[in-house]
Image (cartoon, rainbow over all chains, first blue to last red; front, side, top):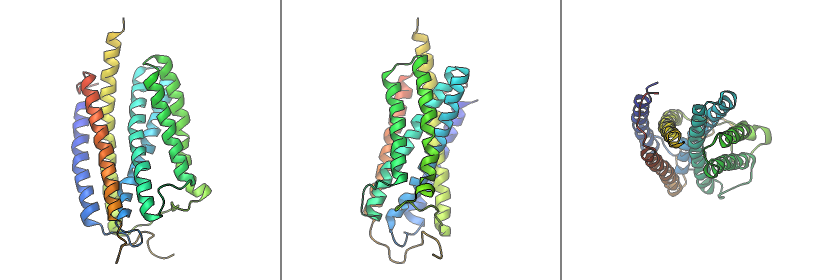
Length: 218
Length: 51
């Protein structure tokens, strides 16, 4: 696989799509009736959440492959996907309260989706703390892989929390006006392209670090 | 309830400040991670090559 070409294509697509998406968010799409302009956070908040779900899913698959095959490249890929997923779930947890403060009058409500999303963020934070303070050996990689497998089970819980337990702030289903739907689809493509560009760059840095560490070992 | 849940505004409340705060936060997070990643990539001695 030509990672260099893929990475450059992903960055070019990410920059172009985000320029278009932001133009549509700030210029094209009108404000929502009851919440006003703050509802426009939706166009990056929701795609960031979906990107995080996908990246955590990939981290789950690569971690399982690492435990099965014990090839370091699966660990590098799992670590990269988990890290970029964590950045996107951080965007969700930062933008959500800002939107919530304007829409509901509160920065935070202990309702099922917010609580389970915070738990998800904390679990992947624990994953990085483990990786940060436990070195680069195979034992750490195995423990981290198990953590990534366990943490992923919170993703469907976050997603279906509203359906299972209800919510005072998150609707179970959202229907959109046409201009909102078009803007949302463009934003989704833009955020996915950004996630792909970050993941490719992070993967390449991970492989380079692994090569350097392997060269330093006696 | 009829019609879309999120409907277009005729007169919308003034929550533009929060919208700008939200997008500023998104920009800061992505830019910070991009810089972190660039620095890490540079220090790793990495270069994009086929794998």
